[in-house]
Image 1 (cartoon, rainbow, N blue to C red):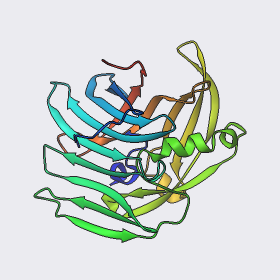
Image 2 (image 1 turned 135 degrees about the vertical axis):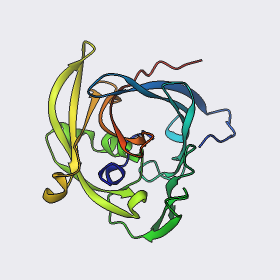
Image 3 (image 1 turned 30 degrees about the horizontal axis):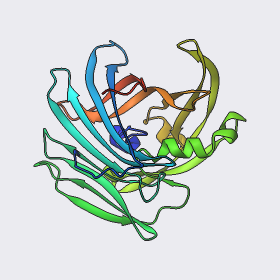
Length: 242
């Protein structure tokens, strides 16, 4: 439950066709996820994104296990709102799916679909600031100056697997150096003392100059074959793959 509650921050995180206009750019990035303790490769994430010059567009993710088999697909659409994108995740191993979409002032969430997890959905009213899926990174970007000053940022993160939302907090932990470049580590955890005993914190490292996420260290939204969340370390290389 803890793994699904915290869900994914960027990942973040269905293969679908889309049309690219003359002003769009298409980028493909491949990132490997390693077990945080053993450093064994768990899966790879291929992200194909099409963006406008001034805003994110549609990002499609394909996840493959260490044997190269596609196990999960995820589709995130930022065109309407970069902080509250519509998204859908499909686990090809079990038939499980989850996602969220904004409908007016409400958010529809859904989960389930596997033999042991029947489909459910719910309409939520989520207080602002409300965050869906990979919208977290754009929240960080919007509040970068405040975070760098040491201010605590709280927000409500939508968790479709729980048909609910939860209050989280993020703050600057310390300045560090990553690959010979200045960086900053942010600490994110659930904004509830009791739940913090059960839900592990996430550490995110951002390059100070580009403000891009370069390291994710925490629980993953990709589950192992037993249905439990991996604990991963992912280092992001923003050199596009042709």
